[in-house]
Structure formats: structure tokens, C-alpha cells
Length: 450
Image 1 (cartoon, one colour):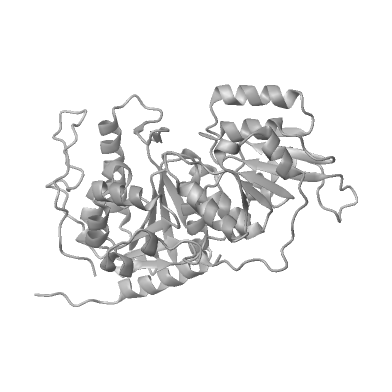
Image 2: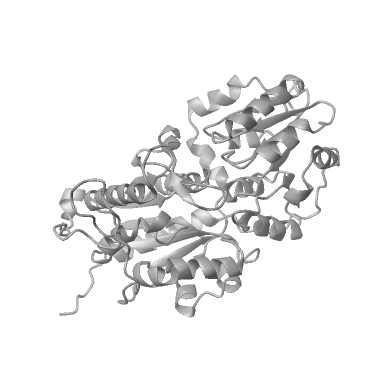
């Protein structure tokens, strides 16, 4: 049950760009009375779910929520799902019927972890106010039975406060979804105390899903969460990205065909080599790995494919194009709607250590060298370190990154373990089962205290 306690620190009122009075992010406008839920006959038997991701750095949050939406939409549930995302290309990806998207004006997080408007000439307070009110308006009109928030309990710069406060007075169930690793324990304790995240979880959230295997990393133990918060947490397992293959459309497959890559299937009579894939997430901070890979020496009969991502800086893209012009066995690809189609064909993978990329490597059981990001968060480093200790991946510290170090790894024989270490990849199945139970609870009448 949610605690009746209120957040003890008052919210900062943001100044509106218009003459109308500003609304504090943690409040609801005085005239915004909650609308009664529509009768069952008006809504039918379909439940409504909102998936929110703030999406300020890379593609990971939105792609994770899309994978969850796809799994829910194809699980036989009678649901309509609204994805609220800070990334515009959510609209370009294949989704089943019953799923739609609302794209927020984009925020950007720089290398120091500071937020700013990505495209609009707005001050931070203005764009956060705009995003906050868009989210609140969408939730009021969509009237979800369940809100699933990705990773940030109060949203980027507390933009969810007004929505969470509004939903607290309704029957909507609120779920927080967390990655397996957030950051170092000291950093999490400091940042969560500053953001009042523990109070927000205690006050607003019914359940906290952990998208990971506690045998690899258990955030309940590592971060020493209070007992009542740990009690709300349910480790589900890693999210198996192979489920996404069921939703790949013709356009996404055509993107792969248009690359004109050689056959890498040994059973194919036209088989003529191996494919090594380098992934750097959205590319925003992947230039160092990309350039080292572009200068590495590939084994004979090997083609290197570098997926740069849509946010790779223009100057880095220019340097990579120059390198590719002198290397006929290097292919540059800017963006793919479904990169797992390429990963599936690869014999090896060199990648940064983002959550989604790591899950894809684990699911497809690809020999991988992970070069994790170590700032502004150490999440990737911690995850890669734990997985490498289990023998599930190889890892290279970014300070040791060079064309020579990648060349050395690419020329090593692929070790085939006698027995692959066990890891829980059933996160999506457990998530669907848990949500079904939650929807049944939501549909049951509750006794109101008089």
C-alpha cells in the first residue's frame, strides 16, 4: 500500500513563459478536478497502460519501454498502451495494434550530467514545465489503469511530480522499472537523497520492477535500500530482446538487405567470411570506440560493420568516413530501426556496455568485448565487470582502448565454454505475469474508509 506521507520538501515553482500563473511541478492546478473514470461499458474490457521514459541520453530508455510494450501487446492482454517518450524515432519503429506514442520536446544530458533543451531555444525550466504539463494532460485524458516509469522515479528534473500527485488520488497503479545497475552505491545514495526518490517511491509507487538477475547484481543489497522499499522490489530477470524479432516489419528487414552485406552463414553456398559488429549505442559518446574499431586490423575474410548511432557528433562522423575510404573491409551504418537483425548475423561483437546492448549480447550468446562508459555514471562499468567475472563477456577498460587492443581481441580464437553460466533472461515473461496479477487487483472493488 502507498504511504500517506507527503514529500517533505516543497517543489520549486517554475516561471511560465506566458502571462498565466505558473504551476508548481508537484501540484495540480486548482481547477483541474479529477474526472471520474468512464464506466466499463464505455471503455469496454480493455485496460490502459502508460509507459514513460525521459530519454535524455542515447536510445536505451525508449527502446526498453518499446520492448516491454511489444511484449504486453502480444501477450493476449486486452490493453491499449501509450508510450510517452523523449525520442522522436519511437514513431518509426514497428509496434503491434493497440500501441501508440506521444513524443515530448527533447531534453539533452551532457557529459557532466546536466540537462538542457536538445533542439528548442528554451531555458531548462521552460522545457521541463512544457513536458510536465504535456504528460499530465495526456494522463488525464487517457486515464490509465497502470503507469510504468522507466528508471527515474520523479522523471527528468522532477517533471513527473504533478502526474504522480494527480494519480495518487485515483485507482491507477504506479510501477517503477529499474535497470539492474544504477551507479556506484555512494553515488546512488547521494543522488537519490537529493532527488527524494525514496520518499517518492514510498508515497507513489505500488511496485518496483528490477530488470536484472540478482545473482549478477542485486540492487536491494548493493544500495542498502530501506526495508519497506526493498519489499516493493521484484527482480524479474534481464529483458530478452529476441522477443522483438516477432515484431520486425518488412521495412526494418529491407534496411539490412540494402546494406549489401556478404553472406556469413556457413551453410550458405555463397558464404564468404565473418562479420564483426561494433555498436556504440546512440553514438553521443561513442566516438573513441568507433574510431579505434575503424583503425583496427580485421582477421582475413572478415568484414567490420560499425553502427555509429544517430547522435554521433558530426566531426567524429567525418573522421570515420575518411577512415572507411581507406579500408574496403569497413562498412559504416548510421542507424537501423532494428539493430538486432545485424547482431544476429555477427560472429563477434565489440560494444559499449549499455543495458539494452548487453541484454542483446546475452540473449544471442555472442562472443563480445565490452568497452563500458565510465562517466557521467559507472553503471556500464559495474555491469560489465560483474558479467566478465561470470565468463559471459570479455571487458576492456576505456583507458586501455586502442586499435591495437581491439586487433588483439579480434584475432583471438573464440572460446566455447563447456557449460554456459546460467543467467535469468525471463524478465519479459515475469513482467507480463506480474502485470496480469496487478490488473486483476485493480479490477477488484475495494472498500473505502468512511
